[in-house]
Image (tube, one colour):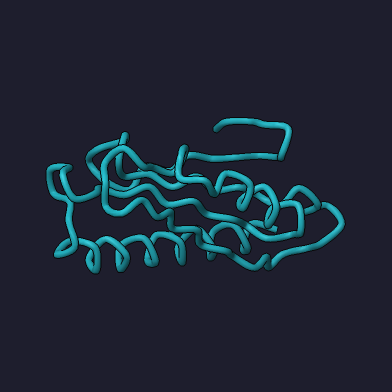
Length: 114
């Protein structure tokens, strides 16, 4: 679990490669004043399918803290791109299906724990 001045952030690895298969979950910063369930915002970065662009440097760094500060769980998703082993367009649909299942399970666990 990482911390920042924007609130609580948790890194969740969803695949074999922690460098290219992870999600950063930004929890709501105003959660004590707003009870669950929380809306979930999913953020997929762009980058022209080039390996050099990832969740850290694709120009969307302010989105997750913004949504978390407005009461949502913001999820930044990192994924394998074109030149990564196991990457490319043909694997993206399976990847997204897996991520949505994981997020649904996190939603059930997180919102039932209150």
